[in-house]
Length: 161
Image 1: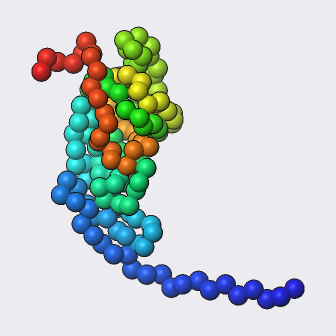
Image 2: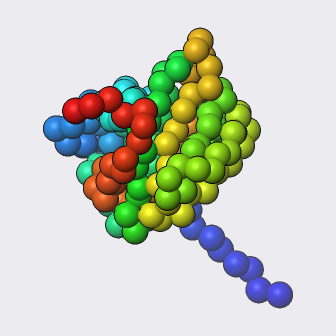
Image 3: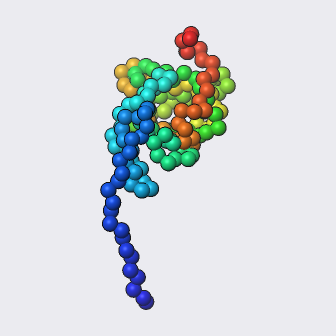
């Protein structure tokens, strides 16, 4: 049996770079591994607040994006579809209902500890079932652009524009 020598390179200090005009935290680039530490909320969309996550806007992602979403107590993310990308969620806190289908005629309730998969093109509306607690979820998308390719669809809950 021959001796095998493995050389482990010394750790390097990650480069800190500005992650773009729409993002307050800075991205650490470790030369292939990127990190955003304890990000702030940077965006509100459709009744949901988002912590800055990872996407093509701040890392070298080509096909994925991920962030943390908070649906405030009693809030609704009005009906929409994700065009040509998949979404996976993990509920960290709270209870949420997804009403879905062509006329939002189906529903599924989920709570902390549940994983959810949403196929591309499925109309859905997200409802926080609590008037006192937020819903908090990790959201992963098979679209590195994060906010592109989301289209509103009709909803009886949506206020007139």
